[in-house]
Structure formats: structure tokens, C-alpha cells
View 1 (cartoon, rainbow, N blue to C red):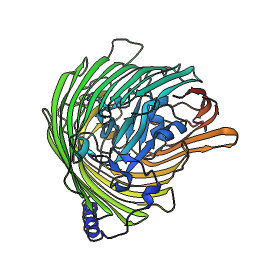
View 2: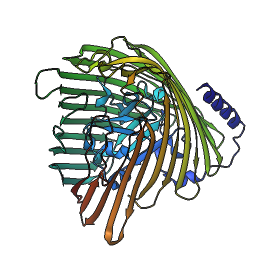
View 3: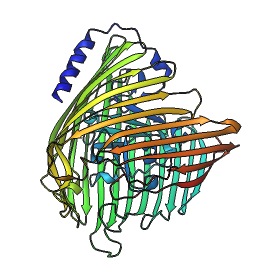
View 4: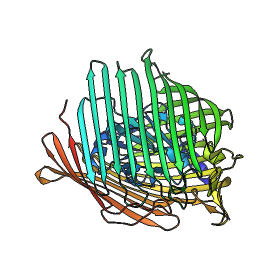
Length: 602
């Protein structure tokens, strides 16, 4: 890591004397209207990006054969999705070899990560129809967002505009049925949207059935005030999910947020946001013996934040603010615990000539239980040529242990109360090349060094898994990306590849999560128009884990519109691959479904 840091410092010094390169032009041809919220304290235009960010737009989402966020992210090499069931019923996310607890999930900038366990981070109370775009920031994000942003950040941004009605229904194998409807209306500066969604399945094997239901409502007034209320409820068979028993789990999550955007002048802007999230979890270890190790958990998270932006000059902008809040849990297994948290942050954006941008950030977080953490960051982008952009970044990240890691006990797992927060330094260097109109090729190398990394370990299969600070863990790798954009909506071509290598030293233990990372990852997203008014969408994801297990999952969709209705034939895992994303948890084989969408327009 120290060698990588020295290389980055030399890179920045070298760039400092080269601000006279020609102005960028090629970025205007690839998603020129994209403004990336996740990459900075203030939204960053695409041609000013200094970090590795993957953006999935609403048109892409609707063109691909996906039914859940987990399936969509599975087509990207940027995110390793570990599902315990189809259609995102239960899933974990990993980025750049980080564990599932080391990825931050946001909805419109509101933290979703659950203080009980990160296994709940995919319990999102939104449907795909509600999503405007998804931004995946690879690398540390603690300087912007605080805890948990080790490997990366997934920010789900919901739709704020549009009007009309859309409904869809699906029927498939294993008694699978899904339905959703979304209504959006607006007049003047008022916008209101409401979505309802639900699904059920008998399951492809014993104790793998599921049922989901939820709603999402958003109100926008005058372009400055936004209110959001969302809820999701799930019940699913959890056969072998966390141990050798037929289990069952019930979860529900409610999210409420209110946001007020204020513009005192062209130079002063501020956003005030309040949020509340609550998550319930009931887990039955063995359905044959009700009451034995049956756990009930309820978490609450409160947050209040103020973010301000001050334009100091034509080239210098300061973003700063603070947050305060707390997390609380009431649990039959973990007990009752709580902590308060507060933070302050600042980011300075500096334009260096016409071709370079420098971002310097610092955030300070204090917890009533875990102490304090300072998270600095530094990133730089420079257009060396009109079609070549170079970028580099470095930063520090941290994560506090979850209540499960601290206090959980069952026949197969035992928490440790004395866990310390884990910390990391990370860096990356990359280049973006625009060889022709609407083409983008990108390459990035990265490295991260964790200290006091948290994992579940045991010395032999006869022992329980116990949470522990395992010490140092280093990881490094490379990412490649090729993208082609089109004038027509719902046409996609993106190819991605990622390589990661991790090292925990001479580990004399079995690792449940930290050492179970994906070494090779590839993703393909393709959508195209066919003759006779047909459209075709395909997504494929390849994963090869450190332990050698590998699998290629390919999904496809064939669709045709008939006036206001669209009929779709969807095929999942069309190669019929038998695979496990999490050891011991089988995933379903080939399956077919028929979907009907109806959109009568405004």
C-alpha cells in the first residue's frame, strides 16, 4: 500500500504542471446530461469525475431482464451480489473484495445499512419502477458518507418527475406471481407518485418459498420540498441460509424522509433532511422446533443533516455540513442497545485551469459507544487529451461493528462484545478513453489495506463461528469497462471485468466472509431492437471465487409492444447452471416467466 500511495503522490505532482492540455470534448458524447450525486458532496458532472462510478439509468433498467435490484447489480462487474434466493428476496452486496458489511447502501442519500446486520441492507422498500438511476461509487466513501463505505457505495435515486400510470403482472414457474402499479400525477410545482408491488412463489425446493409486498410514495412541492414514505414486508423460507437447518424469516422495513432545498443566492445553497427508518426481523432457526432459538429484532435509525454549498470563486467551491442521529435495537437475542452519532464534513472543489479538477474532503464522526474517526480523501481528474482523462484518488474508510457481530448467539454462531471498529486506507488510479463518438473505454487499478478487519472465524468445522478482529487484510486489483451509448432509449451495450486479490497473511483459521471474495468478475448488459417491432435484452454475470467455484448466469428477455401493452417472455439462468453464490445455499436452475406491462400514458 505504501508503494501505491507514493505512486499516487508522484502522479499528482506530475499533473500539477500539465494544466494546459486541450479542453475535453469527448465526454459530451457519452451521457453528457449525467450529473453524478454519489461522487461528491455536491453533484458532479460526468466530465469532471475523479472517481470510478457506474451509472445505471431508468432506460437501462427497463430494457434488461431483471425483476429486482439484486438481479440488476448482478450484471455489473462492479458489484458482487450474493443471493440466498431468486429475485432479490435476500441478498448481500460486495464491491472490490470488501465483505457484505463494508458496502454502504443509500436511497436518495438516506442511509439504509441496518445496525442489526448488513444482511438486511437489500430489504429495500422500493420497486424497480420507482428508480430514476443507480450510482455505484467504487472505493472508500467515508469522507462523504461516514461509516460502512469501505469497498463502495450504492446510491439508489428515485424518480421525481413524469406523470401517468403503469402496471405490470408476471406469472412463471414454481407458482411465481408478481404484480406492480405506479401512478404519478403533477400540476404546476406539485408532483405526487404512488407505487404498490407484491410477489409470491412456492419455491424451487423445500423451504424456499417467499412472499413480498410493499408501497412507495413520494411528494414534491415547488421543486424544493420532498417527502418520501415507503414500506416493504417479506416472508421467506431460509433453508440452510445461516446453518444446517430448515429456517424461516420474516422482515419488514419502513422508511420516511423529508427534504428541504434552500437557495439563498446563486452562491449559497443548502439542503436540510430528516429521516427515520425502522426494520423488523423475526428468525426461526428450525421450523421443526418452533421457539428454539427464535429471534425477534426491531431496529430504529434517526437522522438529521444539513448540507451547504458556497461558491467562493469561479474556480473554488466549498461544500460543508453536519449530521446527527442515533440507532437503537430491541431484540430477544441481542438485548436492548443504542448509540448516538454526530459528524461534520467539508469538501473543497478546485478547478485547475480548463482541464483538471481537484477534490479534497474531510469528515469527522463521533459515536457515543465506538469513539471517533476522521476520514480524509483526495481525488483528481485531468484531461490529458481531448479524448483521454486521467484520474486518481485516495481516502480513508471505517466501519463500526453491527449489533449481531457484538451480541448474537445461536447453535452455530457467537458474537464478541469487545470488537473494535475496522479501518482502511485505499487508493486508485485510472483512465477514461473516448475512442469515438458514444464510446467509452475505462481502466482502473486499486488497492486497499484494512486494519482490525472484522470477520466470523473458527479453527475447525467442529467449532462455532465467532466474530473477531482478524488484524490486517490487503486487497488489490484492476477493472476494465467498455460502453456504447445510443440516441435511442433502451439500447444498451456495456462490458465490464474486475480482478481482485486479497491477502490476510498466515491465517490459521477458517473465514466465513472476508476471505470468501470473488477473484474474477465479468458482466454484460445488452439491449437492442429487432425486426417486426421486437426488442431483446440480455444480462450475463460471471463470477469465480477465491476458493475456485465459478459460474456463468445468463438471463434474457424478448418483448413486443401492442399499442399501450407490452408482452415479454423472460428466461432466467437459460444455461441451467447449478451454482451457489453463498456456500451451502443452492440457487434455482432454468426458469421461464411471462410478463405483461400496460402503460396508457399521461
